[in-house]
Length: 271
Image (cartoon, rainbow, N blue to C red; front, side):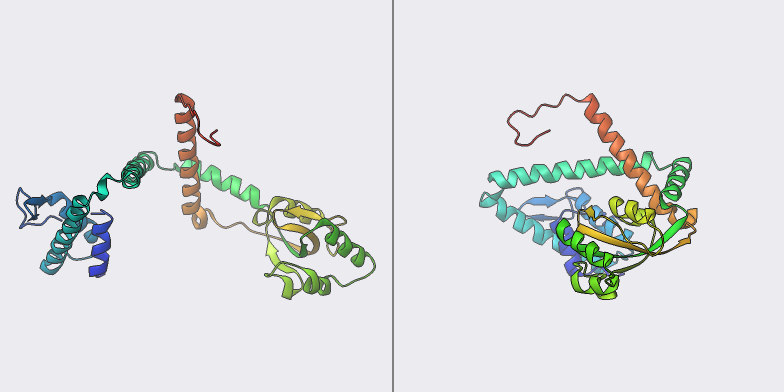
């Protein structure tokens, strides 16, 4: 992996700076108008580059130092014209520092509180329960209003062809040209009102009343069902661990809120 000059510029510009520059002194790796560039900044850039697989040879060392010098020149010029005193900059600086510290804390917390095997296996059992042991094949017609959906059901009751109506009237671009065909899915793979309605249907039947979701109004026809096998634990383990960690972080935030005294005087929409 090569660390390009542009990548180095971006690294310096955003302050994502990491092994060490042997030529550096106690005063830093260089001085610009009498101000030293800290060794720690160079070390951070070099470490990050090394972690990404970039060999830190003499050429890369020189590029890093020169980009730090360029960055320092611009930094000093920005200070000279007072950009660092502008209210928006001060607020952004505070937000950036806050975000860096929050991210550092969260990474440290997740490192010290990894998702346990027991919790991950419990999540797997819940996942299997949610998937169920059946898959469903269905068609649907999606329209904007309940009245349109009722009209479609009335036409179906008179013998109209479901696939033909889907091609003519459905607003779902993913299934319209296929006559409303959705293929095989588990109930967990669809929004709840849709899956709740689909699993109650008998094969070949369609919903007697429109089904509303956040996407609009659906008329659903069940084509077939089949027995399904959930993915193995190993196949989904990584994703489940992330879910468990996310829940742990949400619990942490809830706990911190419960212990804190929070006041929002004058905050619009604050809860």
